[in-house]
Every structure is written in C-alpha cells, then in structure tokens.
Length: 229
Image 1 (tube, one colour):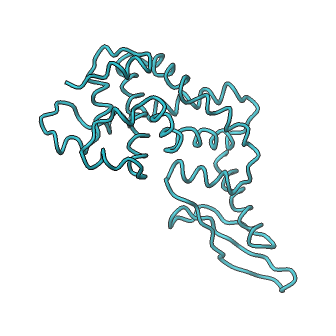
Image 2 (cartoon, rainbow, N blue to C red; image 1 turned 30 degrees about the vertical axis):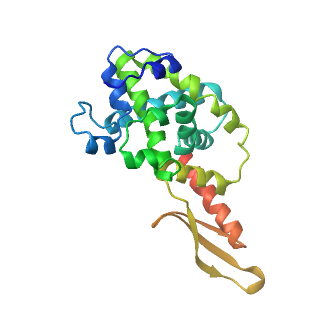
Image 3 (cartoon, one colour; image 1 turned 120 degrees about the horizontal axis):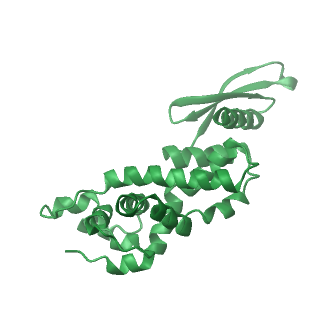
C-alpha cells in the first residue's frame, strides 16, 4: 500500500482514515493501469474540497477587508483559488510528486494538463482533510498555504476593469474574455462604438464609448458592477 507518511508530516496532519488521503491523490489515469487499486479517483473529493476552500477564503476576505466591495472581493477570491495559484501550493507541499498517475501522465511533467491535475489535487486533499478531521483542520491547512496569498493580491486592487474581468474569466471558466465591435454611430469626429464582452460564445455585457478601448473598459466595468449586485 502506498505510504504518504512524509506528506502527512509535511502538512502537519496525520489522517485517521488513510484511505481519504490515498483517494485524494489518485488520478483517474492511474486506475486504468492499476485496476486492482482499491481507491476511487479523486474527483468527488475535489468537488467537496472546492466548496470548503471557497467558503474559507470567502470568510477570510469578508473579515479581513470589511470596506472592500463585493466585486473586488470576488476578483480576489478568484485569483487565489485558480489553477495557477493552487498549482504553486501543490509544488510547495509536494502533492505533484505524490500523485498516483499513469506512466504517461507521470512523464508529462511540464504540460498544462499536469498543472491542472496537480492543482485539483490540492482541492481533493482539502476535501479529504474535511472528511477525516472536520472544518477546523481543513481551514488550518488553507490558512497556512492559501489565504496568505491574498495579501499580495490585495496590493493589486487597482487593476483596470479589463484585467479584473480577465482574472475572473480565467479562474472560473478557464477562458480568456474577448471583445467585439457590435456597432458604430455618429459622425467621424464624434463616433460612438458599441462593444460586446464575450466569455467564449456567450455575450456577457455591452459597453459604449468614443473609442473601441473606452467601450471595452465600460463593458468590463458594467460586468463587474453586475457581479456586485
């Protein structure tokens, strides 16, 4: 049976039920090559851990930044629970090396897919901690490795609306937003542009301005305002 004692020592948690940690570090690809392995893939634990992580980070933001508006808090939360941020945690703690993967996935060290797999393992382990030892211990892990990143993110609070919208889109939907001119009106010296802000094929918001750039900024600002309401 796989031994994760060193990992437990690293994170300062000794699991009562080792199967939770074993499942949290089992990627679906491993099961294809090891059908006798008694644990399930980690996707259900990832689902649970994602919810616990979001609650802990949201609570932290709510208490730490009492004068910050909802839209900004949403951006801050998205920036700290996204793939890039969680991948950094996976590297720091060693989940990336402890993961049970197929031989093919294990060799594909530097790919975007491997980054996502490692990031997802962080959420799965959070779910495992929650099941094994409750909310308090899960929060302790998150506060040690993840919420400290919020201080750095808070310093970037002055980003323009387009940058903030891009962070939300990439964190929540894994896509980059796009802008498209939907219409123009008025004489050449006093032109008005209407721009659509899209997440993939979905039109999220429209904005108007005397230039394309101004219209894009207004569309992004309108979307941030909508998310606050």
